[in-house]
Image 1 (tube, rainbow, N blue to C red):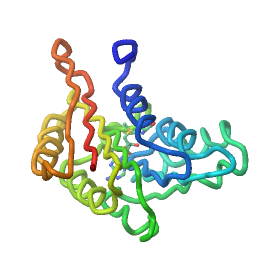
Image 2 (cartoon, rainbow, N blue to C red; image 1 turned 90 degrees about the vertical axis):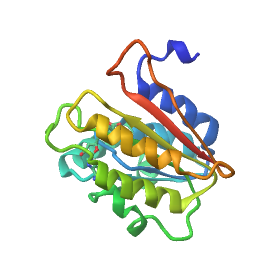
Image 3 (tube, helix red, strand yellow; image 1 turned 90 degrees about the horizontal axis):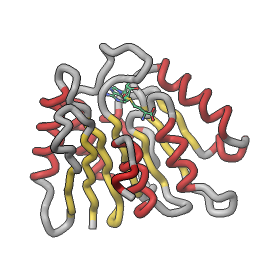
Length: 195
Ligand code: SAM
């Protein structure tokens, strides 16, 4: 099934399905056009045992796009389960309730497709956000990152993510990446699973 997936985000979604349960709290740390947030909502909500999606983006434009997609795709009850925040993902602890057990924090790095390509995720804040995600993730939870290396700064950001992952303690974390060896600029999904 892995080889039928065309995009790195499809691979990430497939992995999420094996980790996320109905009723979970999850975070979309870069909600962009809203496709990942919609996928997450479908994983956490079933109408009787509903979870929450916290969707963050630094760009108002992205939140408007996510909001529109959710408006078109969800019923009014489902829409209440997605909380949108116009903040940097390094501040995620300011918006997610302290007592929430967070099952998934997902990063889809880079710039907003169809938007301003100068507004991109940056290594420094990505690292702060990964540290925040590590603090709030529950055991049995996942940090999922799709890294893009085709734009300026992308390779540096990949190095930042990889060195963060390499420092996580081996007893508590399983860290892996899926790299296309014959496509040097393909996006790279990275998964950090907390045991
Ligand atoms: N997940 C999105 C989707 O499903 O459509 C795509 C995300 S897009 C590749 C990357 C997003 O990260 C952009 O919308 C950009 O505004 C956002 N971003 C950049 N820096 C950020 C930051 N420090 N905190 C939160 N979001 C950020």
